[in-house]
Image (tube, rainbow, N blue to C red; front, side, top):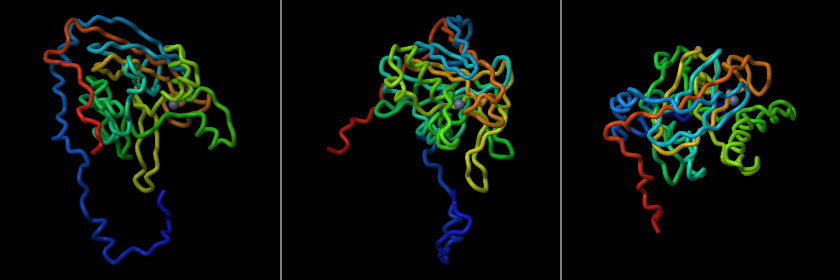
Length: 287
Ligand SMILES: [Zn+2]
């Protein structure tokens, strides 16, 4: 946080420097938004192929072939979910929260994409429907489905709770789920867990101090966030021990609910859809 009493005196032109208008880092003209029309049309007559119920304070992994859709559905009560994505054939290609944030902003919705890590940097999934898109930004600067948080984890909890040990943070839940899904040991699985898309979570930064905040999620049973898998995926979803994240996480105090993952196979791929190739940079790095 910035100090209340800076150690250094502002220069004479401080006001002029602060008055310079910002420019968008990655103008959207360079990255056209996908036309969702063929994606939405491909849902007509789709066939449900699997369901995974993620229990409260636990995580589960699920497979989604390229060209299929999947939905994360609120059931029973308000609940946020921490989502990881991996390329099914190579766990090293995984969701890159920071670059997705740089490209699409702090909170995602329909038409945004979940981008993969270097060196592939390509769309792993496209968000095709968001029943909470009406929320926009609230008066506090909060919104839903953020890529600004990380995932609740037992290490930060240990730091902030005088040595506390809690085993159902999203980080540990995802570690166990990935180990169960792949056969990896826990020490092998843990490094593959990464920063998440905070599905249904309502977050922002305080305007005065820039601190990360959360508030009760507006999600209600029946709401969903829907994705189209651009490549073969393994998804990992944790039903966060924070529940609707209205008060705290990293404990068993909050009311928590399960989340449902549904996978659908369309009768035919979206018209004109071609799976994304890996990134075109030649990786010579100037040598
Ligand atoms: Zn969590």
